[in-house]
Amino acid sequence: MPDEPAYRISSARTMLAQLDRRFPETGERVRAALPEETLALVRESLSLTWIPAETHHQIADAVYSALGERDYRALWRKVFLDMVQTPLLKPFFEATIRLFGATPAGLARWTAKGYTLATRGLGTLQLAADDPVARRVEIEHIGYPPALAVSGAHVAGTAGSFEGYLDVTRKTGSVTVLENTPARGYARFEIAWNE
Image (cartoon, rainbow, N blue to C red; front, side, top):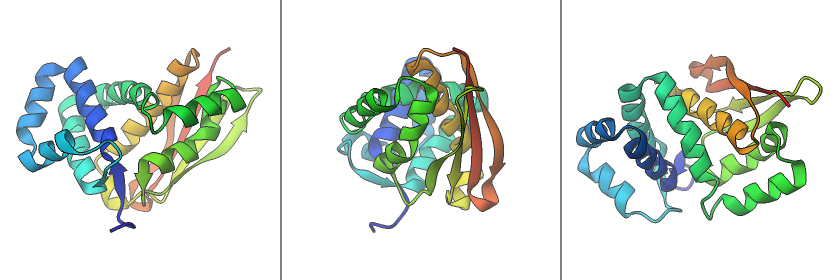
């Protein structure tokens, strides 16, 4: 169904590839715990294929449970760096850098559009605050399905992706989860950086 919440398969595929690179023994355990039909879907689908959000979360929750929040967040920092090199996101990502500059604030302006290319029916990401003097932005995630937000994988993965903004722009800084209300499908993040 076109309106069902979904992710591009490339997101789960990239997550598992990074897991295998960074934590190979954990990757083996996670794969052993997942149903073969889920693994086959990841292996055999084209990169632009949509998979149900529940299937993506089945994988993400297994990885999150195996790694814990800190390592899962670090994993998604690397997943983001891989994802922006994919044929789907790279042209748009590079255009954003040219238009808005290689800063976390510039990338924050890209966030909403990039998210809609990789997800469907999973709410919106929007720039909520932009303070160039303080070198900080806030991004809100509104309307994420509450049933999918309860594990912690969603917010930790999103925060890790935003940490990837710091890597891409060669800035030091931090990403803070300012608010996380799974029952409302709402989260708010701050990205702050130094020059």
